[in-house]
Length: 591
Image (cartoon, rainbow, N blue to C red):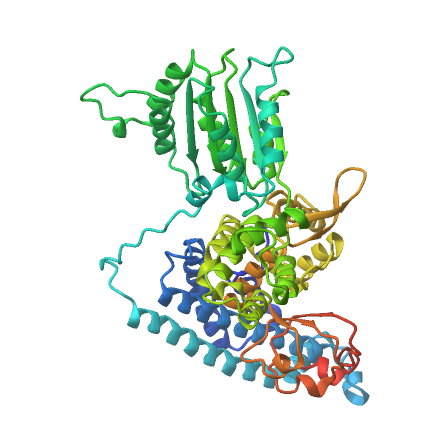
């Protein structure tokens, strides 16, 4: 049985349920009324946790605004309840452990009298907690009633909105405008068409892996177009996070040239019939299939069943963000795995200038320092460069002030520009595909500033201390936490910086565009509050749960006097500031 943990989607509900159970245990000797309030809270929070999980699992476009607002209210309430529970448990423990002197010290030798004295010592605390939990009960009832009061009729139809699959843009991009694609394209084509060795005529699978926005689909499509006509059958299909296996198999059949007999409805065929038909059709043909954007090995295993082994030199390319999936695709010794790379500084410059000015020498000198900083923010990510250059090219005038405004926005929340929404959506797929426990660990990366080299051991210890790790009776907590870290590396959420002789990642970084997504989510969920200047620190609104300071200024207790710090459970400080708050017990006690 794994212990409940703090979760970005559930707030503190997971760990709180365990604490409320502890409060109901005999050692705290709650008043009867308080026990009733806690039992009510525990039952309500159990139901709310189920709702929060469902809301978190919904796609961002599908999530109802009212439900998201209600979920935020429940999370905040769970933090308030947890604070009250922790405060009560601490006070009872401190008061019970205080050593009486004189005559009280003499009678303390009697265990019966000692228990009586403890009850008397903490009776005021128990009355107080009873009143506090009554207030919390009223709040949770108000939250529940509000949702019922404003809940839309479940039978009411929601407006139809079909989201555009932005991966389509990669399939129809102008090849002349691409940069940095020729070398990997030619390398993979050479591997695909290599005629040396006994495996030349065997089915060969090439897997392209890398995080969102690196250009995996673009690369696969360039190879696909370059080799058009060299195979008897070709097909290019996309999988996505929620794959429709039957649709994928039907698309392969259709693109490969399979002709359906009259009066035959292929839409009604099940997976088995589609697989058998596809295997028979491709059995004696030299085929080339691209399976784009695979998210799990199970999907690949099913599709792989439909692709027969033959000696006709057939080839398959798969693309994925997840390294273990790429490895699963390349199960044979003659298969090949290619890891996508970021664009070099020179390639980034060429791509940016061509898309904004039409040539590499068309940029006015007064904009050079600004576009250099913009490219630095893009960090060699092709999708980011294309999105931002498109935005800049659409400006009616090349004004330095406008460019500086865009540069400044990239340093905080790039989602404010609709033109850059595609970049965020591509990166967001990596987040929505994560299980709940990894979403929490991923968002905690927002505690670190941009460009920071993260020590793996430091990170996993913080996860443990924050209660993000499910404690198992089978594995040590540290091993579970390291497993979480390795999953984030495997899913290309973090980029390895340094490894040991066993290829274990010791240090990592988060790409700037991925960090922007993380900070956007942290703001949405009130998960981490990052502060980069004193004015923002002074003007903090609402409850701060985790506070990260990226400051080089002098900070003292008075600086934080206007911020609400009672719920701060994690404090990180980066920079070279003279920081006196940590040494002032009176200020620390406010956390």
